[in-house]
Each structure stands twice: as structure tokens, then as C-alpha cells.
Length: 500
Image (tube, rainbow, N blue to C red; front, side, top):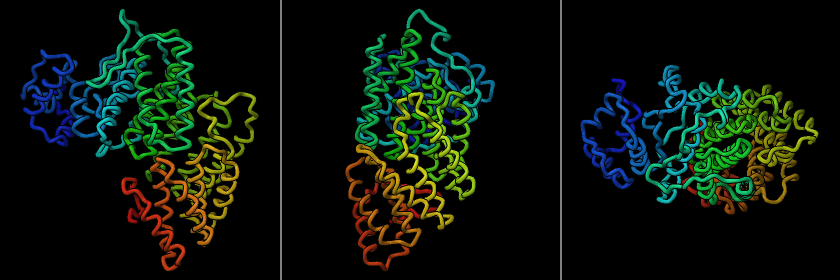
């Protein structure tokens, strides 16, 4: 007991709208349903949790997480409730200023597996009930970059170094479908690695909405597998599978507008990659969070994340990976109107890309970044900068056209982004005829994907059509966009119009 109010629990309690007596009765009922009929919570104990900072004993934190998740329609973890987990390094972290790091980052290996299993289980429960993460807030980037800096730069603590118990660690999700963990071998891991490739290809082709639940379910099972101590070489590979699935779950969540959920998966992915000894993969996971920040109109946060991603990736990063990281940094710089910095960063990206001799096979998660993606990101950066400096719109057009020439089959979402970048650049360059052509090409194919991000980008392009309101062809285009636009994809970004 801290003697201080638990502000996190108090805030969520206020959002839920329960009385203290109601919450006590719900805790007892839920605990009984989860196999703990002996639990007897009362109003005074709930008051102590909220007003005095008392931390309840197991299984109450898990029960509360399940109750708040169902009530609020978004994933609520034990950390979200202001209750820390007991485990290695816990005391040290509390003394290091836990009030500035409420999630206790970074996590120990066994805690990463537990958080992964709990969070995916809650996510699946919400998926089944058709709820979304409405009302949740993105974590401040400083609470991620600060605590994780030193940890990401140090040698990974693998399972071999972790304390062992007589019984294997078993992550115990709170009241949702449980995966019974069991040791696995190389054949099972190979099958999991192949499934990641299938999910990744589907996401690139059709967007994140249709297969997100399958990816989250697979990740939940991997979390159960990580609860067992496997031989070190298998444990590393299993952490790698977890990292790849978590990145996919995060990217798919971002793709359909579940932003806080996406951010959590990116952090989980960075932890999983780091525990598997793959620092470049951890850096790439954080770069996804940076791309998310630029999309949401927070380029300064994106640059902070990119500093951590680039420095924490270590010395073994391939030139092509470093080129990819540079393109994200350049996009953030373009969003801030920093043209000279953006050009320097993109120049560095080109140099790194051509310097990669392919003498070392790229990791599976980098195989999607090819020359077409390099031009696509350059087009996006110059198109973004064109909002501040219209003279660069023609450069954006050149890169977008080259990206489209290089795109291979199965990358439908990337093609849509290229069309939108090209149409937007044409509008900025005062070429409505060409803009109309490419905007319609984007519209034709957008219905075949489940990506909200494509609609978000289209809304930004739609804003540029306003200056051609009296132009008959563009008026028709504007009407087609208004009819096609799904209302649930609307997002508000700082300093930008949200009206259609």
C-alpha cells in the first residue's frame, strides 16, 4: 500500500461508471466464474485500492483487467490499472521512478511472455464481441523511449539467464480462452515461421482487417509456448516468431485505426525481438511505431522513436534496413517542413540502398522493402513536403510513377498509396487532369482492401480538391469520394480539416 491514490485505477473506475459496491460484487462473481469462489471483496477494499493505492493479491488484478476490458470495450491490462507485476528487477524499477514509467518498461523475459499472452487474450475477447478500442489513449512516446534506451543497447537476457522454477512459467490469462502451453520442436517452429509469411503476404495484398484476428490468435498461442523453457536455439527462434507476429498484429491494428492497440503490439514486438537477440528486428518494430506517429500528425514523436530505433538496432544492421529506417525519418522531417534535412536523409537512404550487395540474405521481415518501396517512401516524403513547398510536387510524381512501374503482383495496398501520392502531387502541381486520373485508379481498387489507412490518405487528397470546386470533372470525383468514403475511417489530425 502506497498511501497515495491509484490515479490510473481511479480514472478507469470513473469511465466505467460503477459504484464501489457494484465493482466489489462484480469482482466476486467474475472470480467465482474463473475458479476462485473463495474470494470475498467488499466496498471498503475497493476504496482502499482506489484511494490508498493498495495492490490486491492474485487473482484480483486479472479479474479487474477482464472486467474493465469488457466494460470499456478496449484492452485493459494489469499495468493500465496501476498494479505492477512482481518479478525480477521490480524493486529496482520502482525505485527508478515508476510514476514516470507506469508500465514498468522494459520487461523481463518471463514478463514479456505474460504480457503478450494477457494482451492478446483480451484483444481476442473484444474481437469476438465486436468491440473496438474506443476511448483509449496512445502512450506518451517519452514513456517508451526513455526506459527502453539503456536496455535496448545492452546484451539480451535470454531464457538461459532467467531464474528457473520447478514448474514452468504458465501465463494465466484472465477469464478468456486459455492455450495450454507445451514444449515444441523445430518442426513446429518452422510451421509457425511459414505461417508468418502467409500472414505478411495477405496483409500486403488485402490490408489488415481481414486476418488480424488470426494473427492475434496465433500470437496468443506463441505466448503460451514461450511459457516453457526450450533449448536456447529454439527459444531464440520462438521469440523471433513472436516478434514477427506482434509487428504484424500492430501493423494490422494500425491499418484499421486501432491506434493504442497497435502501439502496444509494437512495444511487445520490440521486447520479443530483443529477448531473441535480434536487435535490428527490435529497431524495425519501433520504426513501425514511428510511422504510426507520422500518420497521426505527431512527427516530433516519430523522430524520437527513430533515434531509439536506429541507435538500438546495433552494428549488425544491413544497409537496406538502414535505408528503410532513413525513409521513415525523412517522412517525419517532411511533415515538419524541414526540406533540407529531408533531402539529406533521403540521399543517405539511396546511398545505403545501392551499397547493399545482397551478399548477406536479408531477414524475412525486410524482404518487403525493395526498390519499389524506396521510391514509394520517397514519393510520400516529397508529397508531404509539397504541402510546405509546392515546387517539390513534381519530384514526388517522378518517384510515385517509378514505384508503380516496379510494383509486383500482391502489393495492392502499396499501389493504392502510390496512386494517392501521385494524385495529391498532381493537385499541388496544378495538374487536375492527371490528378483525376490517378485518384480514380486508387478508388477502383480501394474497395478490395480492408485498410483504413488508404481512406485516411484519400481524405487528405480530397482536401486538395477543394481549390477545383468549379471544375466539372473534379466535382464528379469529389462526389464519388464522398459516396465511397466509409465514415468509420475518419480521423482528425492536428491542423488538418476533418470535414468531407
